[in-house]
Image (cartoon, rainbow, N blue to C red; front, side):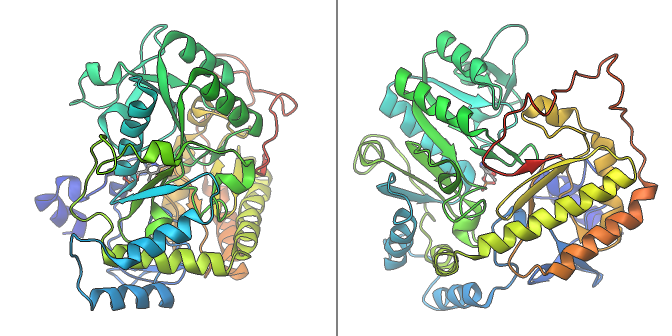
Length: 451
Ligand SMILES: *Cc1c(COP(=O)(O)O)cnc(C)c1O
């Protein structure tokens, strides 16, 4: 009996987060025993080059000695007190120092908690109930954020999961990523008090926003008195040291963090302008709390990570160079074998799509050959390359990755490419295939992209 079968007897679906079950790519997930640098090893001792890195947090790879040391030292002082500790101040200072527009921070235990609390705070500040999110952006699994496009002309969403009352999501409006007209429409129809967006979307593959789109979004929020939340749970400290801020220079009212900020331990955070953040309890009336929030072991891992990033800001150039080499190399192979392919990369994040035009929004992403991704995933996994088990995820490069690792990955893609069988035809323009935009029509973003 495989471990997944045994796990299923005790744990729902055998996993504690659904994507790990490999449902969208098929096959059985390897159970991981240990990690070292850029590699993970499963229970059979098989080694994989790990392009997931715990879904982003491990920017220095597995078992970074500085982070490991910080965790061990913290554990030796006691794992939790539920009382204030000095390390919380230190991490808060290190993070806030990076952002002139963020005055105060609150630490929580996950990205889900950070965005949920940020929305509550934004509603309290704007004194409006309606919020706006974008199709294809993921902000964790809280009720009001699990929405999909409703039927007909309605711009507000319907629950994307059973168990969420439609009453909860009727306040959540949906707009199209990189499409400012859809944002204007939502502002006209709803009484929007909060807008939440991944400025560098990483949960529909990697789709960076156009700079002009984000600028207009900021102006619309100002015009309508809406609080703008940048969800940088994934892009924070990943796309660059300051996440989207280094790239777009746009100041959100609240920024949410997660993943890298905890260095592999469960940490999330929301930070913002003083007059907004001061509404949070105990300073203000907006309730928010957590038994393990600001946990000293987790804070120590985060502090060691952020300090190391600030001490070595040049790593982002190297990481982006590796990401670029990877997707450009794969693109050449794809062209050679007539596979539809496009890609994006920003700092240590990369994404590729089995569709010829680089996606700008969720519809474009859905138009890709998802079946082809599953084939790619299975074959690469067998060869020892651990890519995300879903076409809707971002890939991550960590500092231990070498030029040789990238070269090996490209060579392995070349080896398996002849066996890949596309299931969609992009060359015809009839039937259900959408008309593709010409490259001239798609405005360029400051983040690099190509096809
Ligand atoms: C991962 C992620 C979340 C959710 O974080 P969890 O720690 O999994 O709850 C929220 N927003 C974005 C952009 C994410 O990538």
